Length: 546
Image (cartoon, rainbow, N blue to C red; front, side, top):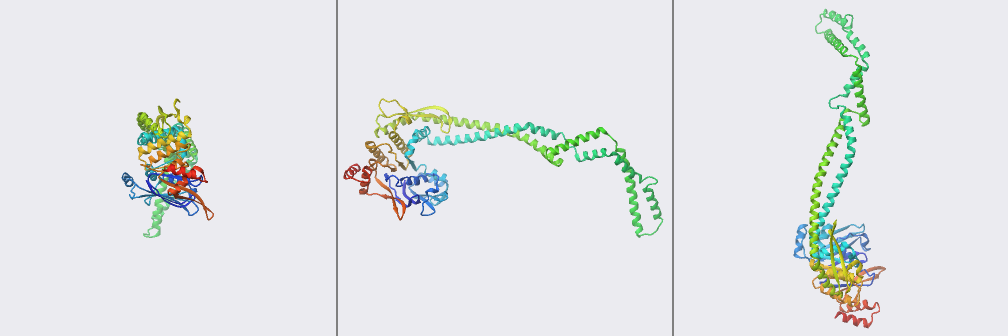
């Protein structure tokens, strides 16, 4: 339960500190006094997103702090997240003007997810709008599961179903990628084949270009080589050089510069002879071959075309492109393998989800009769003695809730057929039905604290008094905070908080007062008669509260 509530700079609340009691506490106040501010403050502790609009004008941040009396079973939560286990446990939310918020448990910063996990079984908030959500099939099924004790199984199914959705999404992405790559594969293969025909690994296109140049310029090359070959002829340069060497040999001058000249001329003589011989060999090899020239030209043209097509400048770059295209083909094969593997995994998850959905549906069906009887019993105490309800369940298609299609059939009047509750029930009947459900749910879940916001909407008179009595009985085991405008409900409470709005120093401030018995009587009388409280209203208020 919540033992203390502190609120600072939250909307119109400058500072508020309340000690909260066990049992049934009523919260009253004029319309617009600020009761919804309390509701919003409580919602923050359930992990609701914070808005900068809640930050008041007294400082840069709003603070909401709860002191909770914890239970022994809560210790595992603190161990799980390595938090200090203290009594009482202090929860705090701080919201700054930019909308950012911080969460603390016993002064240790935690995430919103951790806060939600901690408070989900400690605080239940039901607003008047939640009652009208009872018309939603999904809400009906959620409430049914909570009442039937299927919460853990529903959570397990939800996790597995989310896993299934993720797997399906990943599978579909792979299939789309495979389709895209497959559509491009023909063209990729064409490009690969084009490049593969160039024989890039075995053919050197620089040599091809050189060979073609020789064939294109064979006559010019031969003429030049014949001149080189002529150096070795009888009247050539070689003969003149030999004659010069003979003359120098006749000069005996050891160690002089002449020896160096003789040596160098001798080397030139040898080189000229070799040049002449090499030139002759090349000349012999140079044969005009039109067919070979055409072959080389065709090969080089295709090579140059590929360079231009792929916008590269070297043979090595073309090889890289070819290898990449080959890798793409391998990637497609690998992708196909992954798809097959994922398909098998997806089928396993689908089977597991379907089996769990079947099991959940079976449990839901088996709980029908007992739950109907329990709800009808509660509704009789709320002046709906002829109520008949039936949870009609059929198997439908798989969705995030399982395979169960639920139709809640309802009849509040004797002799009238049961039809869908969203069509049959009035606002007051919906309120009482929801209250009966929540009473049973709180008992099954042993919920420590419940905040009701106008759970008595749409009722009055004796029905309101019955609701007040039921809430009083609930307060024996559960801490209840009930926002209401009905005197019959307020009179049954053990404790009373009054919310009021005042203007102080040109500022509107919302405050909360703890009422003693005399003030309680006055407030209940005000709820009956308005601002002009009559003696008759006071007397009636006293009688209601005895």
